[in-house]
Image (cartoon, rainbow, N blue to C red):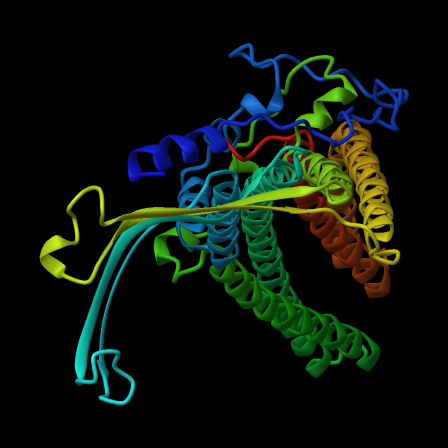
Length: 473
């Protein structure tokens, strides 16, 4: 066998087809209804102006319109460490797959060696000391397994699906990151508005306290009214300290998500009502859209990987054939090393390995592979069920938050009117200061709740976009 013959042998071995012992993959039926739960008063989603048919086709730049929020999301996608880790995990999975796939092809190695040895007089056949030289060079393959029963190919398919799953994991991480940045920004804006509301309320309480204190000094007000006014001032001061602390924590949380120091102009407050988020999404979306969610696709790739592993476990029951061969030249003289004919050498060593007795190793390994496949099926189905629940919750909240916000705005208006009337009645001595304080608390609480409900309404819109599979493009 010469080098010219060895190379075609390697290529022929590499092209031998193998049968697959892995079970034929069938996607499990989604364990959820084909349509979302019907609830009274919840409208169908409306087709957006661009005619998008899937939420996943709506890029986050189309979903979010506020320039500051867009800048924060862009910075997070470039600097967030969790997303960077997820991206590096893809690279690690890709290289793992390439390593596993390389077993499908023979490894061809070149080698060369030289040896010089001195023989003593007593060991020499001529009776004289001698110096012997030997030189060899060649190429060869070592223990290349002919994958006749698909064991190596099944392991390669498993690694491939694990790589695909890691890539879907990065998409899921990006979707979550975008939603987290948007929600953290909304939380920051809401707390800034609550802080501003509290500061305005504190100023009003200070003015009221000064007026009552002067009236008390003149004997026109009682100590009880002074104490009640003091209570309102201190309550507002405590609330202001609470929201000051919370605003700073919101900045820290946002900075962690963005992954770098945030430019001061991006933290200049804007009102929640000015934040522009797309309100319309595709119409009549079936629940099968969940199959395209990155986390669901990741779970399916994990299932495919375990399905392929069954093929590898089955292949271990069959004989394995490995080839080791080499061809090259050997000579006692370096000048004659590559002279054809007398200096050429070759070796070819096929080896077959047939498992006869392995205890319960092989059968238990096959049972383990099937059990892991069943676990992956359950995890895949659970992922779909959780996704269905998340979307159903967001859909239920869509209409109810809108109604709640309208009701809360009406409550603020009514509370303000009641406070204005009671303030005038108290000034004319018709109502007590206690009634005025109670009206003030109601008005303040209604304003707080309006800010919170507005934030929750926007947050729910983001959650619906995320749960329907948007945000990773």
